[in-house]
Image (cartoon, rainbow, N blue to C red; front, side, top):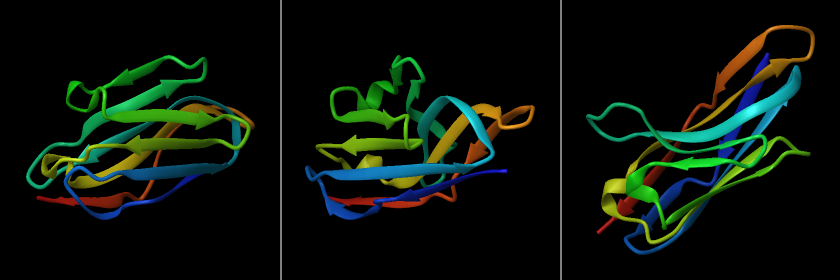
Length: 120
């Protein structure tokens, strides 16, 4: 089993910043991709940002220039620095990790989600 635990959500005003963290633990041999998704009210879950093991990143157009994803590969932690937050960033943010288990097989695990609310 691979577990992901997120932290750092909360309530902020428009223009402010938040930093999300997600730590992966369990039967992990290698993590290939770590990323963040979000699901706003009445909307489908969407990719926010992801980072491959080698450092390649991918961002949703709506967050480019405002959000930054980073990883601490030694600690299996992924961060999401969110600046200049807007009300339409309000959502539950989910951490995702994909890779190889210790013994065998691939994993694709999700965190429990952390609420981010941005007031205008």
